[in-house]
Length: 202
Image 1 (cartoon, helix red, strand yellow):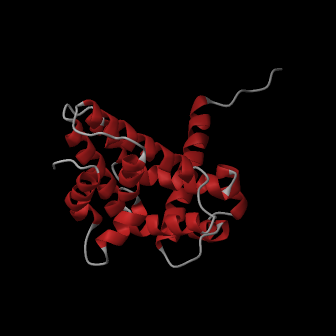
Image 2 (cartoon, one colour):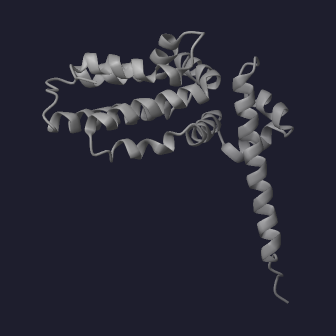
Image 3 (cartoon, rainbow, N blue to C red):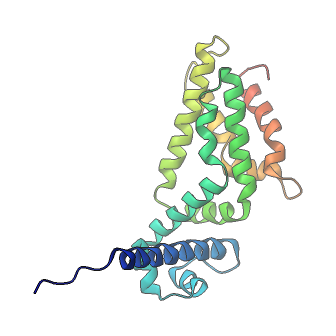
């Protein structure tokens, strides 16, 4: 007699349980990053009320867990709207929207992003963070290239591109905003700085 195959609904229930546990662990990791505890798998497991091995089973490495947290932050913080900036008819308007989207993202998750940035500085962050910064740099290059093609900018060297990349980084925006303001509220000022660096009229 052949083996009995699991019923489809049982497989679905099991998968739902896996997904729910994974989501709970990501939420716990986000809570730990936003709290006062040092970030560790042990702290995340305690917050999620699961065994430490369960965290490793779902994510494999600490870096993969941090990357999953960043993906959730990116979606909820509006980075999924970035393609809109590249389809604007007016390239300068696209650049302004790009800056506004990033400032809004920094505003939505400022506390957690500070911890992630600190981990990166200490060399304990997300390995893919370098890739994300590279993608933002590439986005800046594409948008400024569109502006240049419209005849409003002579890029010359990559100096302007790297300056704008620095001005749109979390580290700069967070420092520029200061404790009494919201990063989203300073987007127009960041735009002004970018326009000045690129010698553009806002």
